[in-house]
Length: 138
Image (cartoon, rainbow, N blue to C red):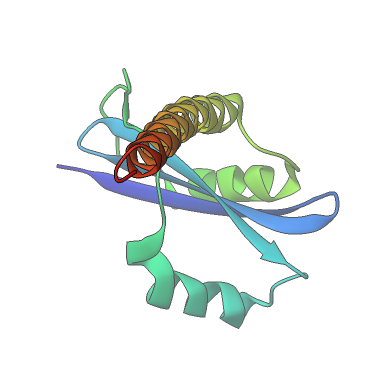
């Protein structure tokens, strides 16, 4: 079992956002966090400590990743520098966020439709009761 996670903080007009990516048991999940104003390092750390359980991740996507070998520390440093220079989000994260957005959109549509139908039923029942009340005692 291998767990890896990565948080990328970037500026996306008009707010600062964080893209939190994690891989757990070969499943890739991503979440988009809106910070608002530019967060300080300690604010990001505090957010992760306090709000980690409340972060809503996308549905898991299986990854076909090869077994990671032990990486040379110098190579790891170069890789980290390269990641820091790279401004933006990986396409994998973008795709996962898009899928999450679409699934949430469909779910909300379904819920609103159910509410609308329920409201129509309630109004119909009210009309029926009024009709009965009018015809009751002459």
